[in-house]
Amino acid sequence: MDASENSDDSAIAQTDIATDGDVIFVVGPQKKKMRVCSVILSNASACFRTMFGPKFAEGKNLKSNDPKEIPMRDDDADALEILCNVIHLRNDAVPQSLSPTDVFGVAVAADKFGCAVALKYASTVWLNPKAVKEISDLCYLMIAAYILDNPQAFSDITLAMIFSHVGSYLSLADQIIDQLDYMPWKVFYLLEEQRNLIRIELQQLLFQGSFYAGTDDRRCTCGWGSCHNLAYNELLRERHLEPSQISTGKVSQVLQQLEEMPDPTMPYEWEPCDYRYHKKPRYRESRALRLREIQEGNGLCIDCFRSSTTAEDQVHRIKH
Image 1: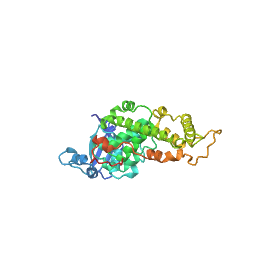
Image 2 (image 1 turned 90 degrees about the vertical axis):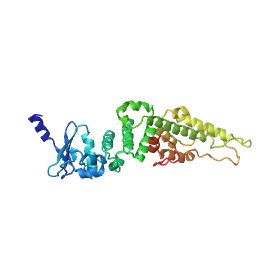
Image 3 (image 1 turned 135 degrees about the vertical axis):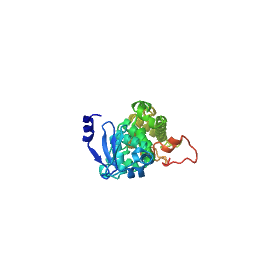
Image 4 (image 1 turned 45 degrees about the vertical axis):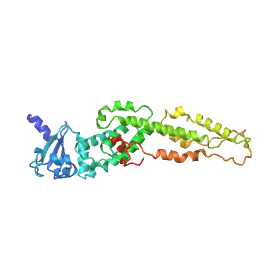
């Protein structure tokens, strides 16, 4: 290394995560420097505990008044800095929000250095899918939740993917092919399966609505059940809620349509008879509870996904 390269290295700004730290990480191709405390890192991670142990050069002669530089050329500097800030309780320097790709990067760093537990609470905020619109971004969050073993986040994110995506999930795999080293491909098949189950349930819910008015009794002269059923089916056609449309539509939009759909209006020329058992059907009210249960339900169970079993003694951290 010539003198100019040495001067370039010395000019690189240093981030003091621990002002009295005994180690300086020199990270990535940009050689970003961050001063950290080996004791704090060792307490958070068995990987760091081994690195800074007596058997490796990185752990020998560590002094806070003369911190040792440790090169980490293959690591993501930004992700490692966030990880170290969390471990050092530097909440003033920890971002409240991160992009999905950044969350994924931090999760990869945490997995590499065995620090997933240290990110348990900070990652809960980062893994919230509510403000995420792009399905590819949800994929990054899903993989991050899987790496960090966060069952609630994994469930919430996969449910958002089920509700918000229309096309095949397999096409998403091509967009994030490099990231799929961190979780099995079968997640995309399970997402498709769960989405189909919800679509079938919504179709069944609408089918049941055709019976809310009951069937025509021989003592009924107005065709109460038939007329209500006809009006109900015409309403479904007007609202584009026929089976073929539900089976190819976005689940979130179908749920919204069902929430907003009024009860069918009977034709003006129709007059009910005086049969005493006629009772006005409550279509909207009858389906409201089940719609809410679907909306507030769970996505995929990370424990089932990891174990690939349905054994009775399987532990499920998310109820389903």
